[in-house]
Amino acid sequence: FATFSIRTSLLVSPSSFTRLMRLFSGQPAYNDWFLSLYNVFFTSLPVIALGVFDQDVSARYCLKFPLLYQEGIQNVLFSWRRIIGWMLNGVCGAIIIFFFCTSALNPQGFNKEGKIADYQILGATMYTCVVWVVNCQMALAISYFTYIQHAFIWGGIALWYLFLLAYGAMPPSISTTAYKVFVESLAPTPSFYIITFFVVISALVPYFTYSAIEMRFFPMYHEMIQWMRHEGQAEDPEFCNMVRQRSIRPTTVGYTARSLVKTNPLEDSNSNHR
Image 1 (cartoon, rainbow, N blue to C red):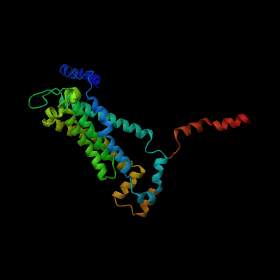
Image 2: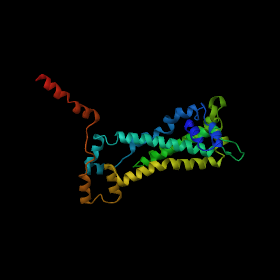
Image 3: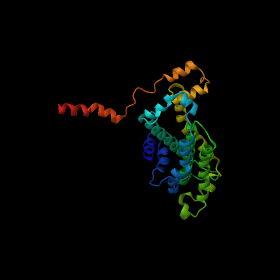
Image 4: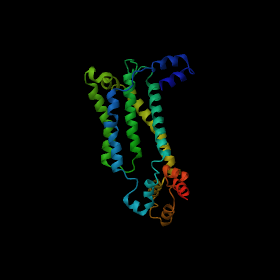
């Protein structure tokens, strides 16, 4: 990202190049403990809650439309198209968070005293946006909310602020770059909350737009059931029969099996015996 920023700044103006040169550094933006606890406390519990408590459709609709079970058998939910789509979603969110935060925090004064946002403030702000985006996107992906999911999602965000407050209160030898960064720099500054709000909204817009278009125009089988329930057509026999007759996708054979069929090892061995 830093290299890309320097290259693009050459096409803009010398002043932009001077400002962005300060971003080119070997110093990591995130504190070591931020990275260590990311998958442990701040984002792991919502994923567990999603896997354990979420329901795409109710048990009654699973019995009414048994073809729903074919989505797992046919590997629809874990196809390469969906895996690459999630990867692109992560890259898109990272680009939005990075460039929006660096553009908003650099080079104007960050607080009322005119202090410039250094890499400690930049790293804490970007990390705050990451925690918000991941948990809010998890909330958008959930179909069936429970109190536990609410507690894990919003509790994970609250835990980040509590950790930043407690960790920053430790001596500088322990907290290093996070020393009082929240109490003295982030919390008293309105621009921190404004930047967090707009960056999180901007990072969620691509995922929300894609999900809305897919749900409305290219729904998967379980999404068709959800849409049918939302529209109140679950008791319409004609519409239910139409949904039951729809095929999920033409092939159910995995890549390895297709490769074996192309090579036909059994047929070759039989011909050799002849």
